[in-house]
Image (cartoon, rainbow, N blue to C red; front, side, top):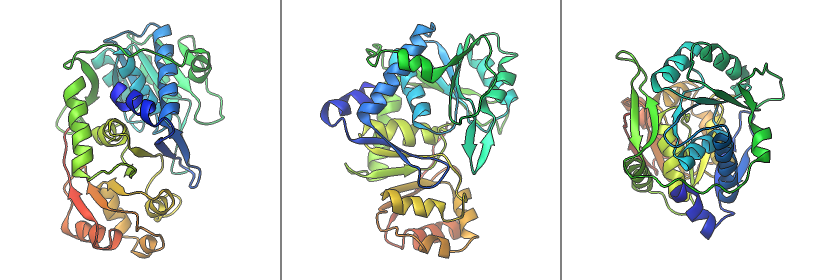
Length: 336
């Protein structure tokens, strides 16, 4: 977190770290590096208050937001190990990952919002932790104004953060200490918890972000992946923040409220690098190029494809229509 936050706060505290493109179009929230450090430290101190220590595992089951990013960074700040679970997974999937990793706490939202729909995150966590004796606390943040049932181990996160100190000294870590665990998708059997260490992971995330996407200081980096996947860890959170970039957090779907959503966001936020999945490109291709051409994409310099092999038709459409034949298109692959 010193590399991702403190070094930038010292030099340019008011630089925008995150632009949260919320589900409803046009309601973007800008978070500076100073604000993100404050959020991270308050959350870190809250975790410590409730007994989370270096080496403890913490599950994060949240939709994409500045608070979910701060949750990852807060764990890193105190030497705890985060395991993010995609907020679309079932209670059974969440329980399996919590049990396998031995998490002591869960950070979640009362509800999530995606594509105009409410997602019952807290209710899913309640169902999951029934069978997870390792869980001591569930930290519940508010994404919507709706009330949810709160039990004995549930802690209102924002209330606790408001009382916490805004300074939290970073834990001293070895380069080989665990930074996070992330579970494979389970397509070839039981999901496996993959371990990433401190120094090696951050180095490759920062270097690949800089050189693969030709990131230049001042660029707005738009990776539309969820933080529940390795792509979100590396190219929404750790890589861009280590390089002092402005990273876009995309909470919605490619077709909400219409199939022009991505390109409207590119125009409004002046995104320079756009990084998405072939599945989404194929989906948008079927709606026709008029949805793309409605919006100004002149800010784009680099396009990226990730998550699966991209077929020729999708590649050509992405390159010629979205990138107007002038953007570099990098076809990337990573593994959890």
